[in-house]
Length: 307
Image 1 (cartoon, rainbow, N blue to C red):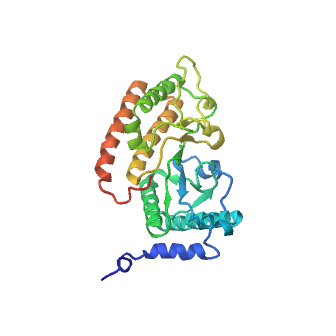
Image 2: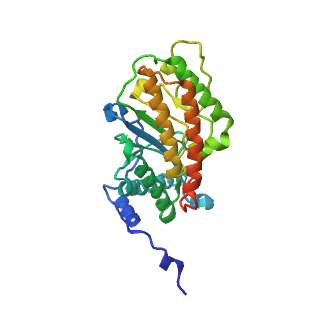
């Protein structure tokens, strides 16, 4: 009788990632505690920088099972090494599949947040997301479980060649567009989850902008909202905080939708006479088209157990 482990072999790239992780140069060690400087990365071209949040499965609680030998400090050291090694293998696989490694950073709500040190060109988006999906699947299947948990988000910073200085121009049009899209997101949780990976919640709050005010300041929408304008002051970007990575297909649709919205804001600020009502109609139509596309392309994709 053939043993299943004689059939299911660890792929060579996973073996290489594990070997490299165990080498002196391959293990990432502790996580960084500061954010990469995006203002230096973007260089005023069309790029984006995603922030991927992940969880790692808990280490086996063998210390807790043996009360008389339990050493809390030893347990937490073991747990930290376990998580660090898992993230290192995952990151080494990202280098194999995406040609890029991400910087692991600490985060109060998840095990690790990964950010690229250099912003990515828009045309490289889908291959990069496919590499992320494959790296999750291969790490989870052949090494240890790393996953996009319920508390995890996958935020996106967008940068365009046209910069925004001071308050936004065409503020009333921008306010109308954002309010209308917010209203749809607020009442369409299932559809929102299908394209964006999740609905409203902590650090992605609903809002209501005053349409009468003639100006729109970046501070009007900050880190707690599903779209963050205040990041422009710090990084020269607009941040889309709503998405959560569930698959490459789903996340690519969310990414493209956010890119269109952010580009519209930049265009309006630069004096475009775009009709805000038509923009809202177009943005909502794109959502329904994307949902149909996700349903069609995801099919029976065996990797879609990430979230």
